[in-house]
Image 1 (cartoon, rainbow, N blue to C red):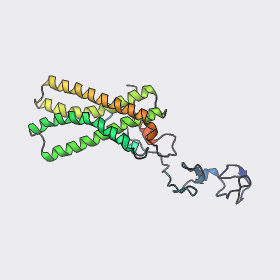
Image 2 (cartoon, helix red, strand yellow):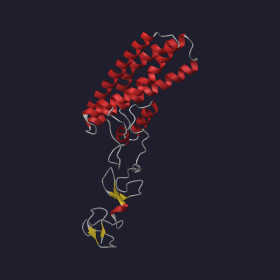
Image 3 (cartoon, rainbow, N blue to C red):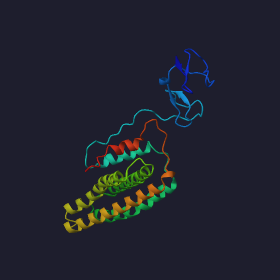
Image 4 (tube, rainbow, N blue to C red):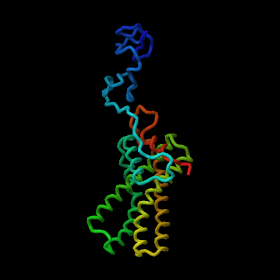
Length: 250
């Protein structure tokens, strides 16, 4: 006996048409077929486009997640890996979301500008180096902001519990805070900032980062329906797989 690749009913070996649904039989084993993620029709497993709805099909390879398991604190590189994973899990972010991300970036950008003024005043960086740092910083801010929004969206989708949501936001805040705090620590090492001033600035930075992340998280929770996931054959999106690598127990 064989199996119809459309209705999955048993048919005779060699039948060209299914006696149950009447459709042409493309093969003798369901192992050779998969469901189209768009129209749910049975198609060949190695198909690149669906023969029914003509949509291009997503790759089925299990995504590689490069976040080291068991670490209690993420690095900035791992935070960027998390952002890269998000780009493989969602369609283009709507302008409304992007505008909110930009608005939440303002407080952090203004804080960072205040720190970089000292680098300019004491000529610690050339104009070219300063521009490179500013560009890198702006890129990191945007990526971190979007991650916070997407964690909120996944929470509303029911993919992340309340407990894990708050812990994950804390985990992604840490490398971002460390990245900016390093600029303050360099000024402290060079005796440009007194120890007390550096401590106050770090406290202020912690407040700015936490406030912005909570605002973005709430925005993602409230607007999750506008953030469309890409269809995937995997039970978890690439972004969720990456989040699950993060140790939230510490």
